[in-house]
Length: 115
Length: 112
Figure (cartoon, each protein chain N blue to C red):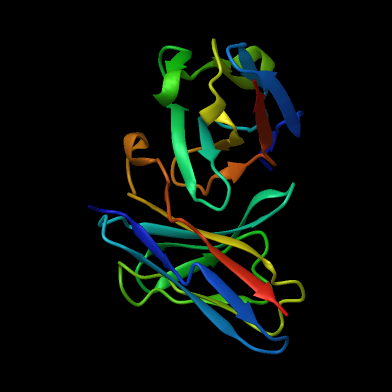
């Protein structure tokens, strides 16, 4: 079945360490997104990419980095510069183009806890 | 800048009662509107969407929503709530290929 796979589901990190969250999709979607979710805050956009080798900052990009070397993959690195990284991270993707394609499909999420 | 407001942080309803979750948006262009549902610790699942045409849209699990341009609203409704509907609900908006902007969510509790 097609879908989005996020790994790991749970991750613990010590302060000062970088961590990378994986997001892989086999939906042949063009655009991919990373959102951060905190209780009572909804989803906030970190980074997005509409095409391979190109990506744009979202509303809360500071302390994060991404790459898009392959269409299927959009890993997110949470760097030590991110002051409050403990959160639930959601990856999503969608086809580009007409309005009918304008529906995000989400992965199951990764929960990062900084100890 | 576009924004989405979900005025109710938490709603509790009795099983079998009707439900309405409110969503108001601020958007300059013609919006595309969405409702997603999230179970604890899970990703988001699309309930329904509005792009154009009939302003009353039907979704999965017996949900519907009505787009009211004059009120900038897209409220979600269900005539009879089931215990399995307990979850968090998010309204979202965008236009074309712009990233989705989400509201802060409404948590729904269902009591017997």
